[in-house]
Length: 256
Image (cartoon, rainbow, N blue to C red; front, side, top):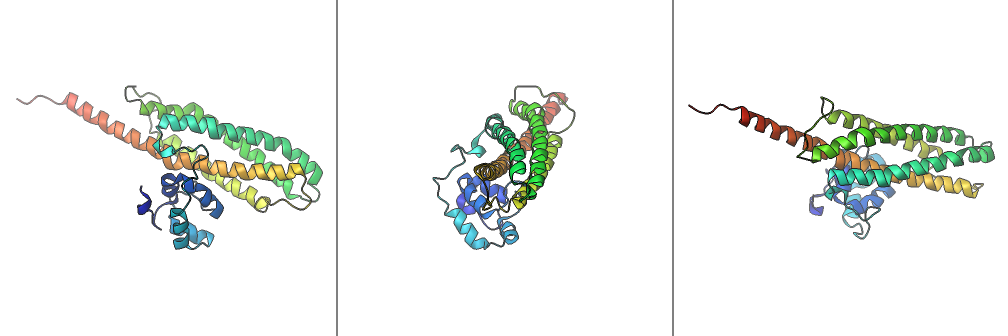
């Protein structure tokens, strides 16, 4: 998609896919381009109380020196390359960040829990988020990503479950929706990640890491929901059509 084709009717996921350097701007406006990437720009702006026309101009004028965190264009990667990147970049960061947060939270609750009772629920949310994401990432690493890599290797005979790749993808998308809801709850509990006046260094570091994790998770989900998963479904469809044609041709009877 070229820049000139971006309109108010363009889905948010397509905008993030076409202009990854504008993602920091979308994050600053809190426009959902990952879990609900099918929502149009106009609809997303209406939900956030933003002027759609002005927001579109801002996106089109976004500094092109801003890139994905590694200066990469995920849309140009193969499925194998993108799956490898997601595991090495986002899965690793998620695990490391959540382990750090789970170490921090008992200390914060002990030191600030009386004056900030919301920390107890925040700690519970982080624990639940960590459990859900770990299970989710393991299923991607052991089942879905290997499946997508196999689909991309045309010379390899496809084996495995007798159902479409869409089935595990639908499960992953459902997990993503749940993760997005949990991130929203944590943002609410922390009052948009604002440090209270009595916050110590650990408190501020915790909120900063949570906000960074939220942004990374949004980008992580975007790369899967809007790029990797649709490509997997399309590749499977194309492969099935090709194999069906080959089967028909090989089974056709010669004309008399």
